[in-house]
Structures are given as C-alpha cells and as structure tokens.
Length: 253
Image (cartoon, rainbow, N blue to C red):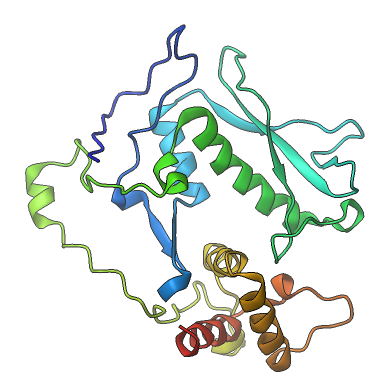
C-alpha cells in the first residue's frame, strides 16, 4: 500500500465534510513501543498534533464540558470518561468521541479516584483516536496495515540521498537513554524519565495479556514495594524503573 503525501492542507467537501488525512502518515511518523512479541507501532500525540497543524489547519481538539463541570464524565457504572471533538475556525465540529479513563490494566477507573495524570493521559489518547476516527489520521496502525513511503514530497533528492538508512528495529530493548536534563545532586538511576518514555513503557504494559501483566506486576512490586493503595503506573517514574522493565522484557521475551 503506497502512501503519497502532499504539502497542501486536506480539503473538505459536502460529500466529505471533514479533512481526509488517511494518506498523510509515513514510516517517519511511526514510533515503536515495547520489545520482541510485545512491540506495537504508534504515532505519539505530539506528532499527531503537528500533522493536524500542517494538514488540517484551523482544526483544534477540545474536550466537552461534563454536566457537573470539568472534563470528566461519570458513566452509569461509576467509572469516568472524557468526550473529545474537533472544531474549526468557522465553528464547525466533528461528532463527539468518548474515551474511557483507563487504569494500568486497561480497567476502568472509579470516578472518585481519577486524578490529574489520568485526565492528561486520557486527553492524549482521545486526541489520537478521534483523529483516526474523524480524519483517518494513522488509521493504518489501528487496522494493522503496512505504512510505506518514508519520504515526504517536500524533501529534495539531495536530502533523500544524504538521509541515513533507517536501522532495522531491534527485537531487544533499546539502551536506556540518559535523562535530559539531569537534576544536579540526584543519582543517575533516580533521574526522572521523559514523559514520552514513560508513556511508551505504560503503553507496552497495557497491551500485555492479563496473566503476563499480573506476573509483571508481582515481579515489579517485589523489587519496588508500593505504599498502601499505591498503583504501579504511578510508581514507574525513574531511570531505575525503566532499566528494570527493559531487563525484565529481555528475560521474558
């Protein structure tokens, strides 16, 4: 499947009321999380926003206000969800798109226990899934179709010839990157990992089968005990956690 892209913004028409971004992404936009049999391709939320700015200018993502105020809606079973949509400069909106607030095991989170990190994570997930649903952006990844055409038309032949070939994706975890910037006086292993790196780790874990996830959580908490009512997803914050998780997947690949 060939994906040809253009620099011009996607146009809408009466028969196609919203921009069609189904052929926008290339392999350069796709990242990979996890290792070995736990790998998954994705386009991160920041890249998604950039592609929307370039190919659908004027369209902005927003969360609908819940009846009681705020952006988290309460479901009949007591869990929570957000409702996202896109709006353009003329006030035209896409249909509302709900996204459940999910915990570490992809389970629902009780409305009363939803905290700020849950909201921001769900906001970013809703952005990406709503962009795929309404604009077709990165639909190939959800349908598990191959993404081709690694070059964008705006890149010159000289740039293309100078571009280094992409390395084959390794089936083993990449070396743990150095945190940037480092906090003076804090040990290297205790430095905080970047938000994107943390999201990749949590995303990988969320895709594990229940039995494998339970085994991981048991092993993790044996090394890094949690406080009462603590959550593993909140405990994964530093380089030592990232290193341990990468080693765990190496051992269990």
